[in-house]
Length: 91
Image 1 (cartoon, one colour):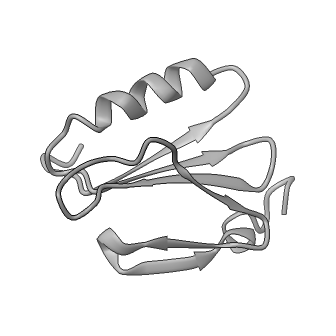
Image 2 (cartoon, one colour):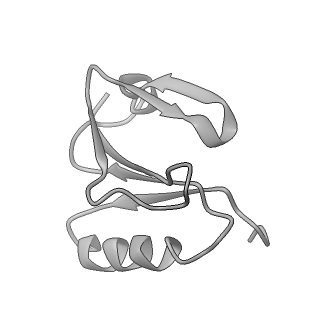
Protein backbone atom coordinates (compact mmCIF):
# COMPACT_ATOMS: atom_id res chain seq x y z
CA UNK A 1 0.00 0.00 0.00
CA UNK A 2 1.25 3.45 -0.91
CA UNK A 3 1.39 5.82 2.06
CA UNK A 4 -0.11 8.83 0.20
CA UNK A 5 -2.08 7.56 -2.81
CA UNK A 6 -3.46 10.08 -5.30
CA UNK A 7 -5.52 7.61 -7.36
CA UNK A 8 -7.48 4.63 -6.07
CA UNK A 9 -9.20 2.02 -8.25
CA UNK A 10 -11.99 -0.31 -7.15
CA UNK A 11 -13.70 -3.10 -9.11
CA UNK A 12 -17.44 -3.27 -8.65
CA UNK A 13 -19.13 -6.64 -8.91
CA UNK A 14 -22.66 -7.70 -7.98
CA UNK A 15 -21.42 -9.41 -4.83
CA UNK A 16 -19.41 -6.49 -3.49
CA UNK A 17 -21.33 -3.37 -4.54
CA UNK A 18 -22.18 -2.24 -1.02
CA UNK A 19 -18.64 -2.80 0.26
CA UNK A 20 -17.13 -1.08 -2.78
CA UNK A 21 -19.15 2.10 -2.29
CA UNK A 22 -18.39 2.06 1.45
CA UNK A 23 -14.69 1.93 0.54
CA UNK A 24 -15.12 4.81 -1.90
CA UNK A 25 -16.71 6.95 0.82
CA UNK A 26 -13.82 6.09 3.15
CA UNK A 27 -11.27 6.97 0.47
CA UNK A 28 -12.69 10.48 0.17
CA UNK A 29 -11.44 11.17 3.70
CA UNK A 30 -7.80 10.57 2.69
CA UNK A 31 -6.22 13.99 2.05
CA UNK A 32 -3.83 12.78 -0.66
CA UNK A 33 -6.49 11.12 -2.83
CA UNK A 34 -7.40 13.18 -5.88
CA UNK A 35 -9.35 10.62 -7.92
CA UNK A 36 -11.27 7.40 -7.37
CA UNK A 37 -12.09 5.14 -10.32
CA UNK A 38 -14.72 2.41 -9.98
CA UNK A 39 -14.69 -0.13 -12.80
CA UNK A 40 -17.69 -2.38 -13.36
CA UNK A 41 -17.19 -6.12 -13.79
CA UNK A 42 -20.49 -6.91 -15.51
CA UNK A 43 -20.48 -4.25 -18.24
CA UNK A 44 -18.11 -1.81 -19.91
CA UNK A 45 -18.58 1.13 -17.58
CA UNK A 46 -16.54 3.12 -15.10
CA UNK A 47 -17.39 5.82 -12.62
CA UNK A 48 -14.87 8.52 -11.76
CA UNK A 49 -14.82 10.86 -8.80
CA UNK A 50 -12.39 13.76 -9.02
CA UNK A 51 -11.66 16.20 -6.20
CA UNK A 52 -12.06 19.81 -7.34
CA UNK A 53 -9.60 22.70 -6.91
CA UNK A 54 -10.88 23.51 -3.41
CA UNK A 55 -10.75 19.88 -2.29
CA UNK A 56 -14.45 19.02 -2.55
CA UNK A 57 -15.79 15.81 -4.03
CA UNK A 58 -18.68 15.82 -6.53
CA UNK A 59 -22.11 14.66 -5.36
CA UNK A 60 -22.15 12.00 -8.09
CA UNK A 61 -19.40 10.26 -10.04
CA UNK A 62 -18.81 10.93 -13.72
CA UNK A 63 -20.03 7.90 -15.67
CA UNK A 64 -17.88 6.71 -18.56
CA UNK A 65 -19.61 4.30 -20.92
CA UNK A 66 -18.24 1.86 -23.53
CA UNK A 67 -17.37 4.45 -26.19
CA UNK A 68 -15.95 6.97 -23.72
CA UNK A 69 -12.51 8.02 -22.62
CA UNK A 70 -11.24 7.69 -19.05
CA UNK A 71 -9.20 10.78 -18.18
CA UNK A 72 -7.15 10.51 -15.01
CA UNK A 73 -5.81 14.01 -14.45
CA UNK A 74 -4.08 12.99 -11.22
CA UNK A 75 -1.56 10.89 -13.14
CA UNK A 76 -1.78 12.51 -16.59
CA UNK A 77 -3.29 9.42 -18.24
CA UNK A 78 -6.18 8.76 -20.56
CA UNK A 79 -7.48 5.57 -22.13
CA UNK A 80 -10.49 4.56 -24.19
CA UNK A 81 -12.61 2.59 -21.74
CA UNK A 82 -13.14 -0.21 -24.26
CA UNK A 83 -9.37 -0.72 -24.33
CA UNK A 84 -9.33 -1.29 -20.58
CA UNK A 85 -11.77 -4.18 -21.08
CA UNK A 86 -9.97 -5.68 -24.09
CA UNK A 87 -9.21 -9.34 -23.55
CA UNK A 88 -11.94 -9.78 -20.94
CA UNK A 89 -15.33 -11.47 -21.37
CA UNK A 90 -16.76 -7.95 -21.92
CA UNK A 91 -14.20 -6.83 -24.49
